[in-house]
Length: 306
Image (cartoon, rainbow, N blue to C red; front, side, top):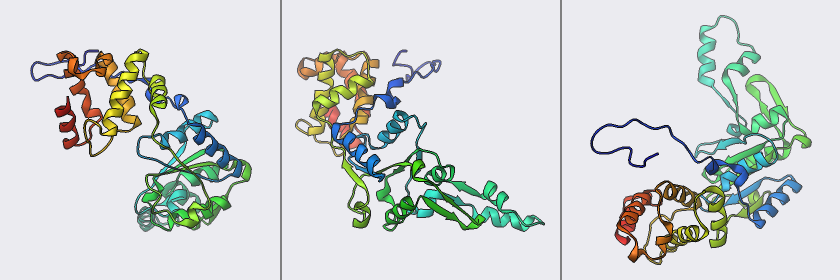
């Protein structure tokens, strides 16, 4: 597929999008030994695993990897909001819809109908309700109100919750205990009582050798020399030795950037000496930078550097 599909003149047929299947292949996830140990500790103790680390370092992807690794299908995901309550992890109740229906229906709505029409079971509630082993991902728990983490852990320890709107309680056995992965971009707002009851691991940004392994797993088409040049150029940008960015790109951007460079037929070996880079290759490099820069100032800084 030609890269120059959309131009300032003429017309073109929109091609079929052909994504790189490796980009979202969770079996290619490469956990460090430290992360593997943290997972094993959490599984042994039956405690939630709390992960911190800068965005794009693979916190969320670990949950998908574990679900695939243990043959559990996709994880059950709860995306924490600033107004989330502990109940939201288990179920949501459409009180307005229930009220409106009760005003127009002559007979009382049965609990069974209420459950079917106005109760929506969420990630943790769904796992407990069906008593099946599952990976439950509670993403960005640091966004939640301060009381939520402690409330959640109390419910997790009991593996039960009540739904008073339908006069039901749900409980699970230890054999069906879900694997719970929580992510946080900052542990500052999490209460001490919560931190004492989880297994904690911080995912550091990968070193050069690890980045090479990660990109090699996810992106085809680069020689060892070319891949080393791509990663080294990325690290130069992140380290701020040549150009200062307000927001550093993460591992996820590196993988996407390397994939784009391959599609552009970029001669990555030329990254080793920017002064002798061909004009054609320089143009391709400039085209690729919007993958790494996520604001106007950073994009200008990269363009001015090259």
